[in-house]
Length: 182
Length: 182
DNA sequence: ATGGTTTTGTTGATTTATGAACAAGACGCG
DNA sequence: CGCGTCTTGTTCATAAATCAACAAAACCAT
Image (cartoon, rainbow over all chains, first blue to last red; front, top):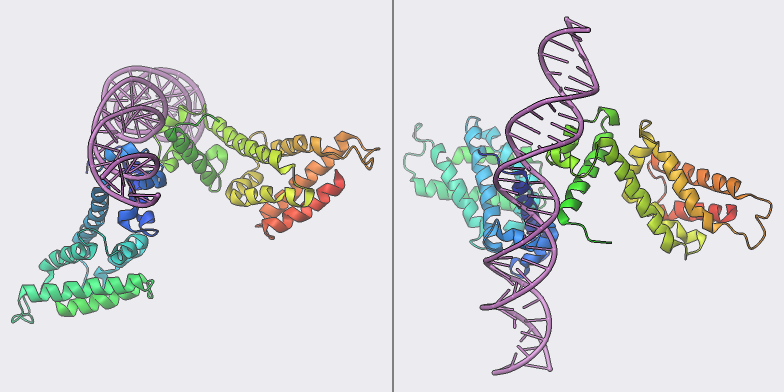
């Protein structure tokens, strides 16, 4: 990964933080470019050096998290199911503000929830047990859809309810259930 | 006040925060320019665009706070003694990390405590009651030194003991006592 | 002391961010 | 509808920050 200029990282980070913060206060469509610039303490014009418009910014923000999530997937696949999900839930916890905002907001363009589901289903593809024969009579479609929605559903519930269990605990339970399903 | 460029404000702020943070972890002399740059997430060379060296940086940091303190003094002099100190103690609270670090560190060049005392004594000069005659037989020297060290002493105690009373409460009590002294 | 390593200041070429200004759109309200 | 105001996207010249490289100090263990 070519190391990016410090300034770029800083302003993009500030902008993303600003958007997340503002989304907790008002609807995305009510947020103005100037709002974002002010909150990020950045010149309004600077935003256009990095993004097309606020929708593009939100899009990139979402994309960033989805990318980080499936980068985690690559080294997590070496663990068994009970432990594999721990880093994920720790990630959700660390970025609580982002996920709760995104899962809450109805107007998040291209609905975040949908993209999250797609990403997880993609990630699950390689994890289906085709050896033991326990899934012989089940088709990929059904399996992925089942496990994917279940996973997203649990995350949604956990986040919206203020993370009632520590990451490790939910992760282990969900890991067990996912292991059974796939 | 000529408005400074956003970038300048940001890097200077980051640098000052970095110094404060680092001073809680190690002695000032052990802090390297690179440490500061790293913590502030700024290029090492950038530091030299603003300061001579780390001592200059620390100096400017102190100066900044002393300036803000005596700017507060100007509009605070319209209040009576019981209320006049409230904004000060709120300021100490807000910048708790700075003051506790500064008052603790023995090696703070030019000893912060001394500069603080000088600033307060200077500020008290105009507040001595020369009308009622109650101070007729007292000389400025004695009065200023007495009140000044008392004030600094209280602040030191309050900060070092983790601010055992809310700012308002200490401020009022100290205000009363200072009023009697001057 | 001495040789190796770290830290310090400085430099120069380059990239990014800034502020201010502008025209064109969108918005709301009387 | 039309008018004023706010928002958008873009431009330009300029200022600040970056990275990499360098020589000189300062530091430290042998």
